[in-house]
Length: 106
Length: 123
Picture 1 (cartoon, rainbow over the protein chains, first blue to last red):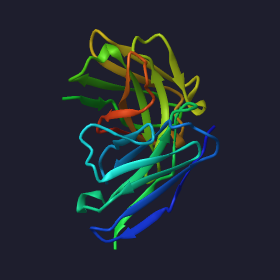
Picture 2 (picture 1 turned 45 degrees about the vertical axis):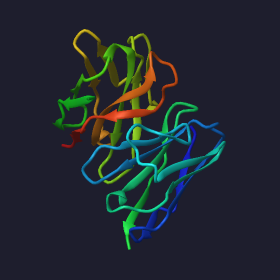
Picture 3 (picture 1 turned 180 degrees about the vertical axis):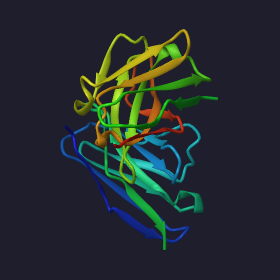
């Protein structure tokens, strides 16, 4: 099983700041990685697929990068609605998710 | 627009069974694979099962093999998950999710999700 490790577990930031989230895979997953956003009481929402492609309707402030084992989700300037939990997910070998990073308001 | 609505959750005793359903609309259901993903209370996401667009192949995470059965009715636009021999660690919100890949091409991501249905296994 490919294990995805996300860091940090919690990120405390102000609105307007830049957020940088990390996802590290236990073995290479090429570019087969996605990012999801989940708000309390809601289903996850696909943000990024294939490491760097924004899903339909996702604002340009969200960007993804990386290849192989190290990936990054960047939110260029946090909006109030961006405070949520973010998960990475790989599809290179079956499907696994990372443990999540919570972005909280500082 | 894409809409996925789950039903069938509830409280069940260990060893019991439930059948979860997901009604799909707003897209060509017969052309997309479908998944079930679960989330235990206060925890992260776990992929449970996948069925190909035409229902020909089905896949399960190891912990549910032999206990869960996924099925897809392309004539009724519904996805089901029969869950048997339930255990306390099956307690979770179960989401149905649409696979992003058209006719199996370039899939493996979950681009639309239902609101989820809660399954609680407790005596």
